[in-house]
Length: 173
Image 1 (tube, rainbow, N blue to C red):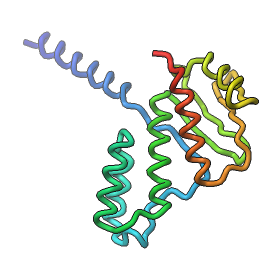
Image 2 (tube, rainbow, N blue to C red; image 1 turned 135 degrees about the vertical axis):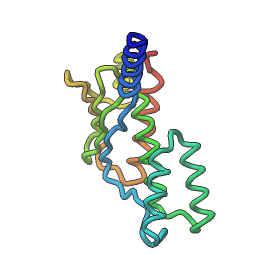
Image 3 (cartoon, one colour; image 1 turned 180 degrees about the vertical axis):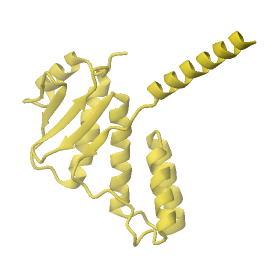
C-alpha cells in the first residue's frame, strides 16, 4: 500500500511540474500606443477590471472581437483606446505563438526578442531583409531589429501585425 501511495504521489508531482512548464508567459509589449479601457467608457471600476481580465485571457482574434462586440452592446461605440488594446492583445498572442519574449517600438525600429526555442526560420528573416525590410538584422542575443522610422499610432499596430505575419509564414514546425 505504501509503495503504491508514493508511486502515485511521484506521478502527480511529475504531472504538476509538466503543467507548470507548459504554461506560457505572455510576451511583453512596449509599442507606445494608448491601449486601455477609458473610465469614461466603463465607469464602474469593477466591471472595467473584469473586462480587462476577459480581454487579456482571449487566446485569438475571434475571442477578442466577441468580447469587444459584447462591450459595444453594453456600453456603446468602442473608443479608439479600446480598439488599440484589442490590437495590442492580438499582437501579444501572435508574438507568443512565435515564441517571442518581447516587442518594442522605439520610434526607429521594431525590436523583437526571441526565445531560444523560437520557431522563426532564419531563412525567412533573410528573405524579409531582401524583399520587404532592408536593414533588418538579428543579433546573437536573438533580438530582431526591423527598421520602421516615425510610425503613427495606427501604423504601429498595423506594421506590427504585418511583420509578425511575415515571420509566421516562415515558421519552422
